[in-house]
Length: 141
Image 1: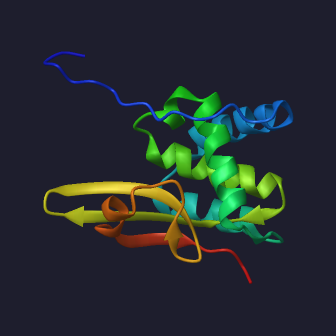
Image 2 (image 1 turned 135 degrees about the horizontal axis):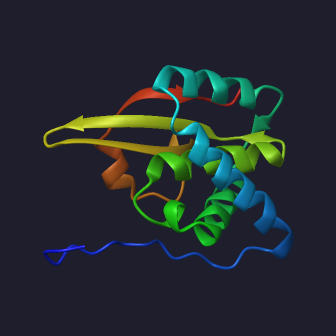
Image 3 (image 1 turned 180 degrees about the vertical axis):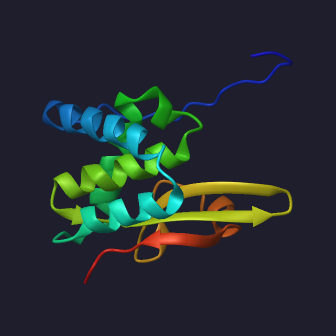
């Protein structure tokens, strides 16, 4: 990187050993899925959410911590991959958070995250609050 630009990586506590392989799997599958067109990605995630109960904040935060710990991409600027990986890892445990993508217009920006009961998990609430949700896959209740 040039011009003094630095890459900010999130830090994460080491997850339990048994959670690491599924987190690696979720991050890898998420990397592939994020290459899909947005509408198809939403359909795939909606299909994946079937049969899962709603995730609580602790479950979603645990999954987020695990994918950030095992994947530099998820710890860095790839919010779409991170959010998909978190949702998939929760699904492997039988739950589903709300998966969201949104935009701001001034200046233009896009972001993806997971939420529980409408509240972003592991995100700066003030930052995410500025985004208008344009696509979401909520848990089925």
